[in-house]
Length: 309
Image 1: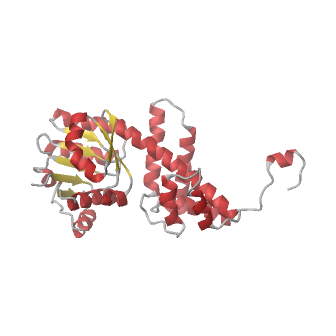
Image 2: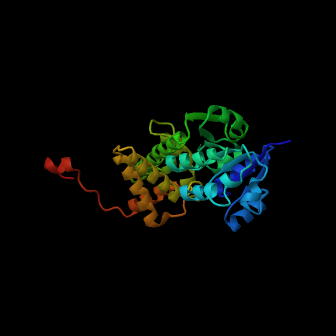
Image 3: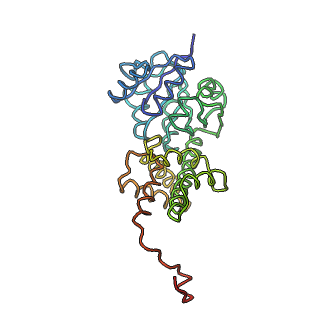
């Protein structure tokens, strides 16, 4: 008999997770608070319950993929939530990017009911989730992680134990700080290279093999070069994750000025009309600025030395 799993949250990531697990032989039942999301998941062949309680019944493995800490707290701690109605002894895996403190709170509540909570954010998007190629991070009891390994390894062959519950959320937050910081400077640098006369395809070809490359650059820029900014990872979700990084730095009493600047630049892109687009729409913002750029201003060193531009 295949392992019975409930997936709570059927947005882009949750539905991809549910569909992959189903295709990999697991018995999957999904639930989402939003009726249109449930209808779309059902149309895609995912079994959808009539309520969260029904989705949880008799399922010893539960995964949640939700938008923010408020949604996670509601799904886990609400009157009809996971902690109240999960099967006895169930292992609960939280995949979202949320505050480490929120993860520790819901894990403590689960433990009081004899449930086991694991902190399991992922690196990768819906495409990787659908194909089982996520990078899995896992915080919590090592023995419980081992018991959950069939599920985790179905979603991604790489599973890294980060320590206690909450540590995986820390790793995910700082990973996204790094990735989005790279995306910002890559967008700025790329737009500058094109503005200075290099053909975009040639510029990408060289940069993709040079020292400035990153997985974020090589994964996202091919879409951007086709003016394809459909949301594989929404700009507003990136901004949310960067705010989590800013909050984490403040909580730890550590200055993080570079991350704060990156966050503000993402917020600027949202204000400039790119909400709902992929995070790589940063490039479109810089391209817009390049098209309207004024005549070059002489460098400060030129002015100081009396040289003409």
